[in-house]
Length: 88
Image (cartoon, rainbow, N blue to C red):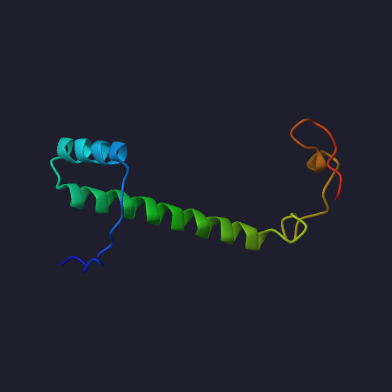
């Protein structure tokens, strides 16, 4: 038995609607059914990414260092361009 789904309405651009219709037809799905599938997948993916980032942020201290890790070395303070990062 599947869970009851909530009704959501949105508007798409003509280009997005045409693409959705084409992909739904290709997958032999109803337009609304396929739109629901895509929206659910996108929303749950975003929620998962936010949860992962929140968990990572909780593990890292306010100074950006991993809690419980030894002090940062000079190597750790080097930025992308190879220059030492300075505190602002």
